[in-house]
Each structure stands twice: as structure tokens, then as C-alpha cells.
Image 1 (cartoon, one colour):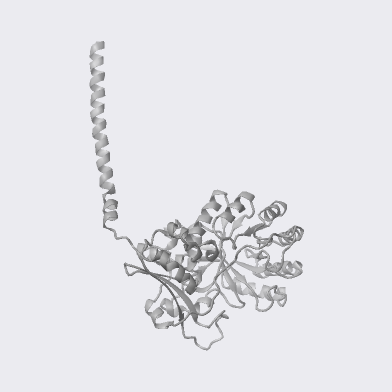
Image 2: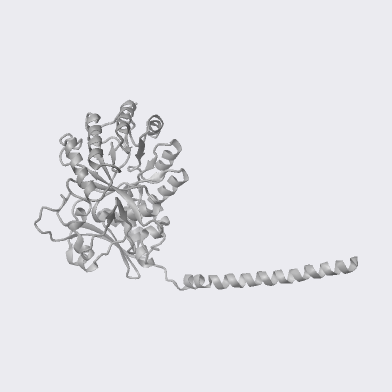
Length: 432
């Protein structure tokens, strides 16, 4: 009986060994069948190379109307950065490039793999934000997907937005009354937006606090106001001054205080977070990831605000979002306006940002007004659509712009209008 049991067990083990082998072989064959399409794609898909990197200006004829916002340069003139691939697909950016940037990028990028963004960043792409943005536009067009989906934001259809207003004249806004700022808030609210930011630059910050209170009253229930000290633009606050301002702002319900101290002061804002209840934000002036790492280690800000042209472009901004997630923090990227805003809403959509800024706007104009002059470049189509205080993330491939390439050719002009490469580099240490 025992011997028979032993034989049965040996037979059973042998049978299990054979069946296990057959099962493994079957699984391997199934896996091979499943991965065959990918293997075929790898062998058949041609490498997509960068064939040309160029920049040029276009000038769109403007009707003599007063309904367009002031322009920093020639009305209707805008810079275009173009990355062309060996497939014929082109990617575009309206962030703005200089001839010097293009000259530096060409020997690094020409005949190189379009998709190797990480490798290109290490070779200089970190300094050419518009070129990287155009590369992502080309990648999205080739993939048939918006950049937000390529960066992981497939489930986020909209992003909350806020408008930042700066009045013409003195940078500290002394020439503007709180009542004027509140009147603009009424226009913003009527247009469907739910948040607005102003500078806190006045020599007496109490006037800025008063303006915030009037803006909140004008906006009504659910409307938010934020303020921006922009680190040292109007002169450094001491820590005690920053704390006093934070307490005054929190009392009237201001949503956040942005860059209250110098950008290389990681500890001061962290103290403000502990000693006041208002949200402290910042980060627009940082290049690369190291400053953000320091912010996380020191608990400097509650919300990180990367600026695409300064941080090193779309991919590095997305990494900032990953770092923020790891620390349980949020992002609200720094903004711009017009067509240059296209990459920002894609990145914010990918990161799930709590806000995307639209800046800098001049009263009484609204965000759509900054695209009007350039609609002929987009088949007459407004690129951004807002509803209930949020922007729908454009779903066209790439940056989401419906670019009319024939119009770019038609309106192209010789020469580049003088423009300064963006720089928000850090400031000196704060007074303590």
C-alpha cells in the first residue's frame, strides 16, 4: 500500500512536471504572440530625426480697432519656433526664440532622435524652452495625441485658471485705486472666471490689503484673490514685514501670498507657513530641479509655481509636478498669455495643477483678447475655451493649436524683432 502510494506520488510529481513545463511553454508562446506587434513596430518604425530648427517672425495685418490689448512690440507680430522632422511633420512654439539660441541648438539637435528629450536636455535643451516646446508639439502630432495625454493627464479635462492684472504706469501700482481693481474683478467675474491676482508692491501694503478686500466684495461668494510680491521686485521685505502682511491678508480672506521673500531664502517662507494661515507659494524663478528640491527639504512653499521658460521647459516642469506629488504638495505654474500659453495648459493638465495662471493682463482686457490678433494663424479659431472658472485642456495633437501652416508662410517676414531671452533668475538673500 505504501509502495503504491510512493509510486502514485512519483507519477503525480512527474505528471506535474510535464504539465508545468507545458504550461510554461504555453505562457511563453502567449507572451510572444502578445508582444509580437510591439516587436514588429520596433523593427519597422523608422527613427524620427530632427531635420531643421528655425525661428522666424510673422506679422498678421491688424484692423485699426481699439479692442485689442497693448502689445510689447509691433502689433500683430509674433515669433515662431519650428522643429521639422524627417517625416515632414513640424512642431511649433510661440514662446519666442532668439537667433543665438537657434544657432546654439542646431549642432546639438540636427539629425538627432526627436524623442530623446532627456538626453537633449543634458546637452543644452534646458536653455531653449521654445525649442523643447516645439519638439513636444511635433511628438504629439506624430502620436496623434495632445501633450497633456503624453505626460499622463488623460483623465483631466479641465484646469482651474486665474487672471493676473497689472495696471499701466508705476510698477508698484500706486497710481491705481482699490476701487479700480475691484471694478476689474467685476469684469473678470462676469466673464466666468473665479479668481484674480494683483501685485502687493505698494510702499504701504495696507492699501494692497484694502484692494484685496474690495476685490473679494466685488467678486462675491466663491471668488478668490491672490497677491504676488515677486520676491524682490519692489524691494525686500524683512521677515517681520512679511509676517505682518501675511496676517493682514489672511484676516480679509486672501487665498495666497506669492514669493514674499527672496528666492534663495528657503527658510523664511517656511516660517511664514508655520506662523500664519495663508498659503505661501513660489518657484517661478528657479532653473532646473535643485532649487525645488531645496524647497521641499525646507518646506518652503505649499504650492510650487514653475515657469516653463525658466525652469527648463515642459519635461522639467512635469518633473517638478512629480516632486510635488512625492511631498504631498500642489502645483500652479506661472503664466503668460496669448498663443504662448498653449504649452502651459498642457503641462498643468498633465500635473493636475490646482491652478494655471493667465498673465500678465492689462485692464480691461480678458484672456481671449490676447489671441484675437493671431486667429488668422489658427484658421480663425479661438484656441482656449473657458467655462465656470476653468479652461478645457485642448485635445488637438501636440500643443492643441490648430495651426494654419499656409498662413505662417503667408505672413512670414524677414528679421527678428528684438526680444530679451526670458530670465527670472534668483535674487539676493532677504533682510532678516
